[in-house]
Amino acid sequence: MRKGVLSCDSPFLLSDPYLLFIKIMLTSFLAALQFLTITPPLIRRPFSMPELGRSVGFFPAVGWIIGGILWGLARALTPILPSSVAAALLMGLWIIITGAIHFDGFLDMCDGLFGGHDADARLRIMRDHRVGAFATAGGGLLLLLQFAALSSMTPALRSWALLLAPVLGRWAAAQAIVWAPYARPQGLGRAMKDNARWPQALLATIFLAPMFWFFPLAAALGLAAALLTLGGVLFITLRRIPGLTGDIYGAIIVLVEVATLVVFSAMA
Image (cartoon, rainbow, N blue to C red; front, side):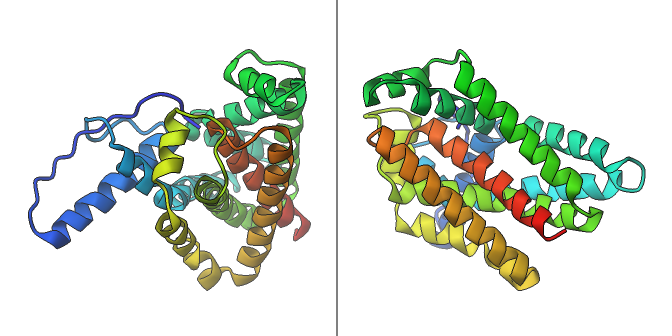
């Protein structure tokens, strides 16, 4: 997950309660969009702690935007490029859109969880941005698996997988933020964790509804993969450190995305 302070500046000065509600929801969505992508600040003031917490509910909405961009590019590249070349370009755009922040979290998680001798050492390693052996091996295997899954799908199946995987990845991260313990006493992830509650988890789940309306079987299989992946990450993490971190949230996103692609590749 992106480290540092996000900023925006609301252009709304509203008194009507309904318009105020719209302002709150729009600000929360923009916070999620700025936090999860390379989108430049659309409004400029520091996000409040409640706004950061409310943004968690909009994580899957940002996933729909990312998925829509990838879907469109996949449809454009399919008629003109071999499957493997299109897969590589799609992976590159995927990383660019997110600023590689989730992939970076996965690398830090690999080094931290598997490189330290106790919980304090593992948390300390995750703060170190140098890339170690576990990160190199884990990152390489993850990218290889992602490429293999994308390359093996039919063009139509790949388009739908690219649309749904970012949504499921960010839904899983939202659930982890709300329900799982946090390991550090402070930081941006701590602020989100402390201000995200069950309404945010519910809102994030509501954003999955279009998947089940338009692609019921694919949505069910993708959600099963997301739940299994999320459960596996929580099981391993909580045995190694006392809670999750921002890096773990990012790792959950990319791991669920790749797990979803693998499920779709099995349907090819």
